[in-house]
Length: 89
Length: 89
Image (cartoon, rainbow over all chains, first blue to last red; front, side):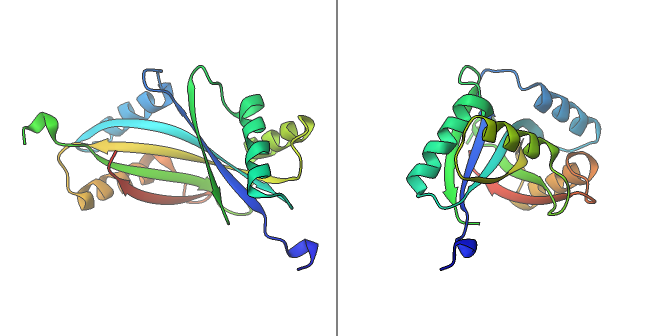
């Protein structure tokens, strides 16, 4: 297979606030939705997804690079819970 | 089962920018990750997850309420692609 046609190795990073950490955006959305008359709403949580695509890397190496990206930029271990999932686009 | 113990009906809303719409946050993250030496990075995409929990509603009704929330607050159909998924927490 030619280099240009190698499918990207894609890792999806899900970053959400730990339980007990105030999710101010979610609270604001919840208030707005109640005002809009959305019935029986009990709660709202938010999360952020970062989808990183890599070139010619093994899944293991792509996960290592993604873990570095999480540690150095995408999440704060004090307040965030992080989940990584590999996927083919 | 007592009312207080009915498990919440939870719908997860995934909002992402349509292909071709500039994802400025993703571009900024991509630039930073390259500067941090993350190897073989081809691209970054971002998405937002909103998890809405409802009380005593059917799945169909919870999806209807969630669709209203999406239309009225969570997404802009001009620029966003939206995916709903039901789940039990």
